[in-house]
Length: 170
View 1 (cartoon, rainbow, N blue to C red):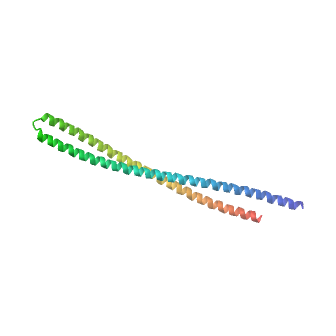
View 2 (view 1 turned 180 degrees about the vertical axis):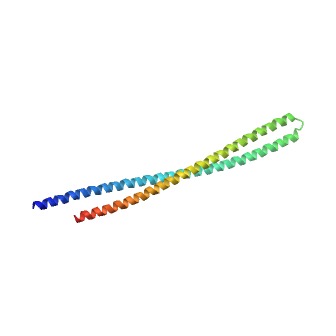
């Protein structure tokens, strides 16, 4: 009789230990699920940010094209006005010289603006490339985490199944 009481006590202790292990596994699975959700949200956030940057990049390109067109139009207009002034005011060399100086200054201004716009565009292209690289790295890390989580979940499932079988047969 005493022997069977000890045997029953051992079974209860093993059962308590298995329940604790199962609880710990379920707790770990919940943590991994939360971590996976965090990475999904981070990925979505990066995707939205990339989309926003793409949109802003396209808007800036469009704006630069409009400004370049406007600058070309303005330059052409100024050159036509200069020619008209030359034709009408041949006598006034001083006025013509002044106007030519103004046109040269405007041309230099437009050239500097155009150079700055080109530099800004190059900077945006570089920034976009860096963001894409970062997004690709983040995606690779996310995929690796998903893979690791899947492997861990599979191992945990197998361990849980093994523990359930042990509980049933003990």
